[in-house]
Amino acid sequence: MKRIIFFFALLTMAVSAHAQIDAYTTWPYYYREFQNGTLILSNGQTRVMPINIHLLKGDLHFIDDKGLIQMAPAGQFSAVQIADDTFRRVNGYLMKVVPGPDEKRFVAIRSTADLTKLNETGGAYGTSSTTASTQRLTSIDLPGKVNTSHMELMQNRDNGKKLTIKNEYFVVIDGKAIKATKKEMTEAAGDREAEFKQFLKKNKINWKDGQSLLKLFEFFSE
Image (cartoon, rainbow, N blue to C red; front, side, top):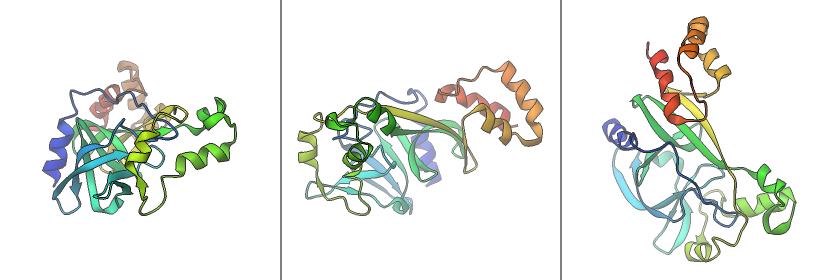
């Protein structure tokens, strides 16, 4: 199973950290359409099905044989491959992987809908109500089975308010996810803090760029 996950991670090395996400209150998904993706199941087997990533809680949604959108139980899979993108569950959310030196060290990007920005621009359908916009966004993010018609959702996909997407970056080392900020990474250096500060002086890190964050493994691999 580890070999499969690592192989999929390598596929993303030539791909940029994340693509432009075109999402709406009526379509709060990472991808413009559901598309066939590969689930790496917890038992090491694989399964291909039409899937997408929900932008509120980082859940995996799929289309069942009745054309209804459902939520895949988190404990049943360990990684997801959609086109050239690999996702792994980090801190409870599916995050896009920027591969590091090995499968235990990588950068993870969590993309979510920014409800604050949505409200600042007037909210969904002309309302400035936080409650209204939140309900609209979470209406298809129910626990367990979602049971929403995929075709109906597609037909109304562009009718909502365009969502602003915010990205959070994490450096994952041996299963521990550290928020990719100068403060958090300096704390993670522990008793090597002074040495890490010298490393940062020599290596300019863009804390909002997955490829740039890979430079940190030069220090944390030592």
